[in-house]
Length: 181
Image (tube, rainbow, N blue to C red; front, side):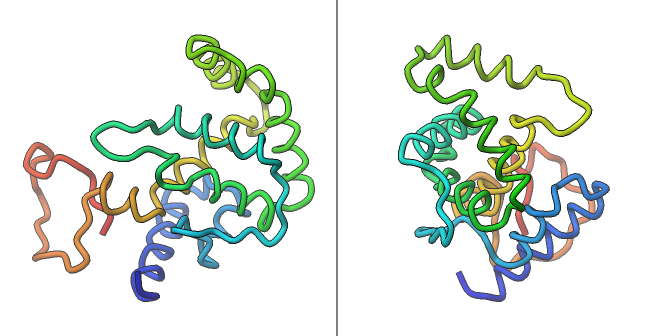
C-alpha cells in the first residue's frame, strides 16, 4: 500500500474520532496518525507481551471479530497491532493498567472451554466503572487494529482504491457493506 493511501486512512480515522467527540484514547489516535497500522509484519520496539500474553490477546481479539465470510482478527494480525500500541505508544500508566487487566484474565481464559471463554468475555463486557475498563480499551484496540488493516479495509469494508462518482443516497441493500474509502 502506498503512502498516499495510508495518509488517507489516517485522515479518515482522525476525522471519525473528531466527529464522535474524540472517543478514542489519545494514545490510539496518536499511533494511528503516526502510521502505526496493522500490516504484514509489525515491529514492536518495546515488547511488553510474553508469548502467552500474545496468544491470549489473539484469542480474545478473535472472539470479538471471528472468521466469518471474511477473515477475523487473528488473520488481520490484530494481536501484533495491540502489542505495538501497548508497548510503543501507551504512556506508562496506561500500559500498567492494560497489563493488570490482561493478567487478570490470563490463566482462566486460555485453559477454559469455549463456554468458559464466552462467560469470561461476557463478564468483562458487563463491568461497570467511572473510567474506561480494560475490556472497553481492548475492544477499542481490536476494532481500530482490524479496520486499519488491509484485511479489514479491503475485505470487511467495501474498498475501492479509485471510487466512482458520488452518489448521495444509495440503499444499503444495494452495496451490502460500509465503505472504507
